[in-house]
Length: 337
Image 1: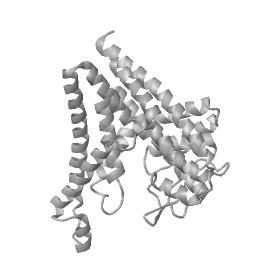
Image 2: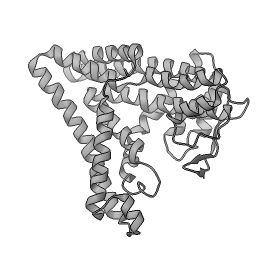
Image 3: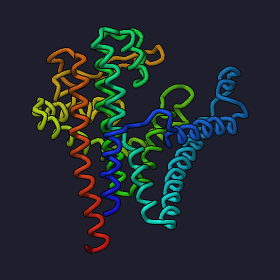
Image 4: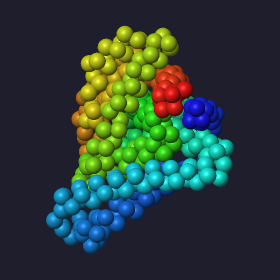
C-alpha cells in the first residue's frame, strides 16, 4: 500500500514541478556512465578511440563489439537497479518513512509528464509567434532528424510525433514498471531507455555495440507501448477526438515504423487528430524513408501540438489509475489481505 501512495504522490509532484532546472537528474548520471563505458570498451577492443579506428582504417570486429554492447547493457541496467534498491534498503533500515519519502522522490524523477509537455510547448509558442527559425531550433532538441529545412507543418509534425511516442516510453511505460517493482524497476527501465537513446543507432559507430540495447528496448516496450495505445484511444474518446479514426489507424498502421513499438501511440494520435505522420526525414544529411502513419485528411498545424498534449495528460491519468490498481492487486495477492 505504501507503494500505491508513493506512486500517486510522485505523479502529483511530476505534474506540479516537472524536472527542475539546475538539479542533476539520475538519468544524466546513467548517461555519463554509458558514455564512459562505451568509450572504454571501444578502447579495450581496438586499443584506441573510434575516431582513430576510422582514421586508420582498422578492420571492425563486429562480434566483439556486440559482446561488449551486451555487457554494457547488462552492467548499466543491473547496476541501476542494484543502486536504487540498495539506497531504498538502507533508507528503510534507518526509518520506513525515509524509504517512503525517497521512493516517492525517485518516482517523481522517473516520470516525465510535465517536462514532455513543457518542452513540446516551446515549439508551439515559437510557431504561434511566427518564428520558424526558433521553432526549428526548439524541435531540434527533441528529435534526431535534421531540422534546418523543415517548414511549419513539418516542425509541428515532428513535435506531435515526439509527444505521441514519448507518452509511451517517457510516461506510461515507467508507470507500469513502477507498478510491478517500485522505483528500482522503474529506474532499470529508464536505464534501458537511456541506452536506446544513446547507443542504439544504426550508424557506423554504434550499429554493433548498440545492438543488444536496441533489442532490450524493444522487449521492454512491447507490452507498455500497446497498453499506452489503448489508454490513448480511451483518452481520444473522452476528449471527443476522432475515436473511431484512432482505432482504425491503430489497427492499420501500428507497425508502420522501423521499431515494433514506436508507431503504436503515433498511429492512435494520427487517427484521433485526422493527420498523417511519418514520411521521409533526413538524419545527419542522409534521407531515411519512413512509412506514413494515418491519413492526410487535413494538414498538420501547430494547434495539433496542444491536442497531442491533451492526449498525453488524459492517457497519463488513466494509466496511473490502472497502474495503482495493478499494484494494489499484487499487494492483496502477496499478503492475502
